[in-house]
Image 1 (tube, helix red, strand yellow):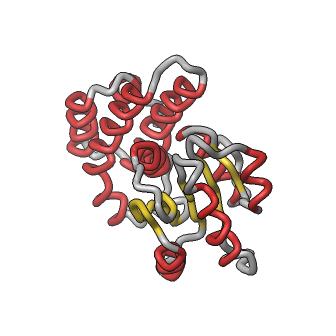
Image 2: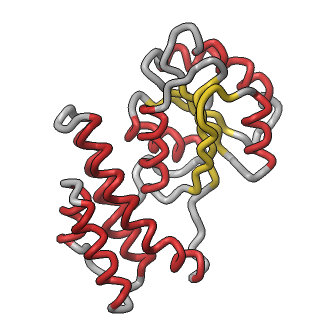
Length: 212
């Protein structure tokens, strides 16, 4: 299957109505929805993430594209489940204890979902117990978010709690987080923005940074 250029462009430009129309058309004509997701939809959202990283688009545009992508995923998700399509891995994400900010986290959620991960959004003000419960439900990567310098230190207790679990990886990010801080607290990965978070999660799992 070749890339669906019209759908690709609709996602990149955040045309939700057109995305829904084209995805439904693909479903109605019996196209392979798994290929549609992997060869057109995920690459389109990845392009938006790359543009964001280069400073060519900003958070509002990226949110519009991610929401357009999600509208298409909502249509094909039941079909993917029926076909036995397996997500790359189960991920959980939450803003750490005391941090009530979620705009950046929500953007990462959409990018991860659009990149083929099964994402458990834990919300804000997440305690260690919240992350532990997500691990019990199968999460293999914990994504910790913090916007405030007063809450970023809440990441360390979570990392310490799972330090003996080689099968659990922890990726951190947020406005006040740096690579140096991530290294200091023992995180397995650091994402400097929503697009880079996808790379960090993939690398923590030993996957290529950008899927072929």
